[in-house]
Image 1 (spheres, rainbow over the protein chains, first blue to last red):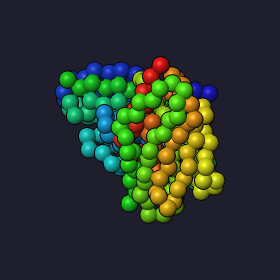
Image 2 (image 1 turned 90 degrees about the vertical axis):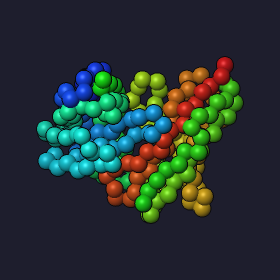
Image 3 (image 1 turned 30 degrees about the vertical axis):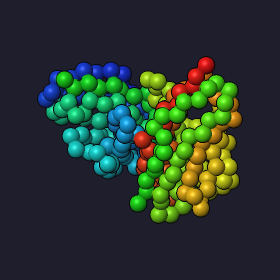
Image 4 (image 1 turned 120 degrees about the horizontal axis):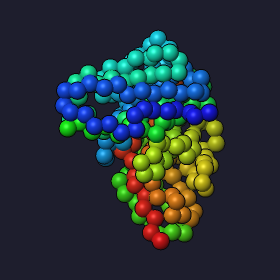
Length: 115
Length: 113
């Protein structure tokens, strides 16, 4: 049981290049999330998918697109990378459930540098 | 609207002394509150959560937090710091019924030998 996995772990891009960050979970969760983490700003939600077939914008969606490929996988795409997108990206998953059980589980992160 | 304020960006304690990491929240309804820990170059791990049951919540590694509605606070404490507690700690809020979390900006805990 690997939990939430992310690939790649590290990536360096040039301005204008595109790339896709991959995320998969094996906990049979319905909901999946993408966050970015910047120094002094905590984690900010980029996009989330409450269930297979749905996606919604979070706090900072500009410059990103997402695809919920199936229940297990949720990818984040940068179409034209900019230096402002240099960050650490975390994927998370959770079950839609009552408050008592709700918890988000996080992957190890992808460290992205855009030159 | 929900928000979280972590009152200290950096806390430094000596090994064996108590830890106090402060968190205040604002929420329209009855929130769920969480503390997550992030060790250097690692992902986030859940320490504990409050979900309207007991107001004193015990978590992993000897940490606990007390929900005080009158003070809108959810401070994290530990009686005796260990070197392995050095990490960044995030206070997080979830509105009732919401499917998203809102993170504080984090508190970096340093433990001095």
